[in-house]
Amino acid sequence: MAGIVRIDDNTAVHASNLGMSGALWKIGAAILDIDRHLACWLIDKSQRTAPFGDFDLRGLSPEARATFWIGVERANEKSRDWDQDAVYSPSVEAVRSFHEKRGPQCDGDEEKVDPIDLDEIWFEENRAWQDGAWVVEVATPEQWQSYHDIRRSVLFEARGLTGYNANHPDDRMQGHMPVLLMFRTTPVGAARLDLMGDSEACVRTVAIHREFQGRGFGRALMAGLDDLAARHGVGRLTVHAAPDAVGFYEALGWIIVEAAIDNPLLGKELQADV
Image (tube, rainbow, N blue to C red; front, side):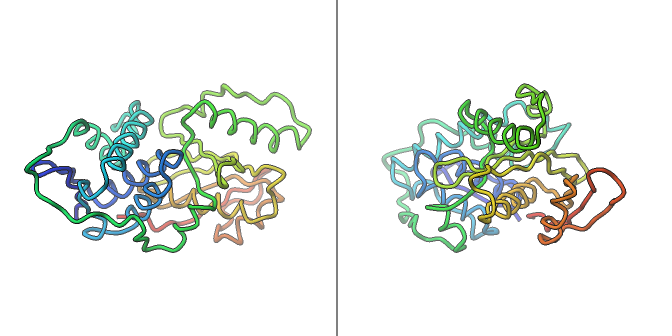
């Protein structure tokens, strides 16, 4: 079944449930700093299956429509270097479909549609995004700085290690997605999700800022990574955990796959969005 977003009387974007879901999530996350109200509604929409995720863009106010297209531009910029043959992502394909249709739309005699109620939120957890914690993919210079600051502090300096490389090529490799956990406007956690192909992904370098540890942000970060992975068609996650973190992962449903190594390997099955 396909998801549909109508743009004007003659134009619409069609994508698979998986592709449309991921695209709306990416567009919403890209505008959290501009219009969190619209962003939360789009993220909530992304969790609804067709036809309940379908909508008509003309139901938004002119200001909200303009912000939506800013989100499309930002989401497309972030994914413009993806090679679909190397790491297929239906959400990237859907974002590109939106981007191809950006620009002035029909006015005047176009069909009148009912206004969209941005307060219509189906999933209560999404209301927490108004004043809670959420995961965003790293994109801006400021986000990259926070990403490296948190990882350097928690994974190196706190362990007496040196040699952190803020320019490591793995962070910008195709299919690797560095993320931040945001609490209100503050970055409190960092991690990276590496798409491995065959519906698998690996979670790496999970870190919560020392001032925010022990407050449930680790669970929030892992939940965000689960959601991000599922939106890219991932069915299985793996992680090499520090020995003192194994219990944390087991409490979240991870299973030990290989214990007789310095950093035990754990795995987790996901219900990928379809």
